[in-house]
Image (cartoon, rainbow, N blue to C red; front, top):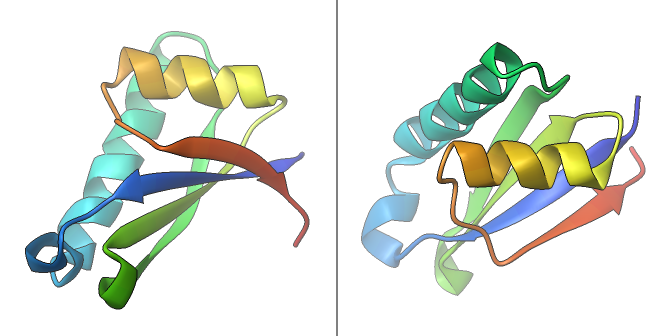
Length: 84
C-alpha cells in the first residue's frame, strides 16, 4: 500500500510534545477508518527547529489521506506520496 507524508505546523512548544502529536494522528486515522477510509498511521516525527511535524500514513490514495485529514480536522500544510 502506498505511503503518504502529511506535513503539519507544530510551534516549538508543541514539537516537544511529540507523543501528543502522534496520538492526534492516530486518532485521525481511527476517525477515517470509522468512516470507511482505509488509512493507517505508521509513525510521526518532528523537526523542532523548523516547527514542523510529519506523519506517515498508509492509504490507497492521496485522496483517502486528504479525506481523512478533513474529516478528523487534522490541519496540514501538504500531503505527498513517499517511497520507503
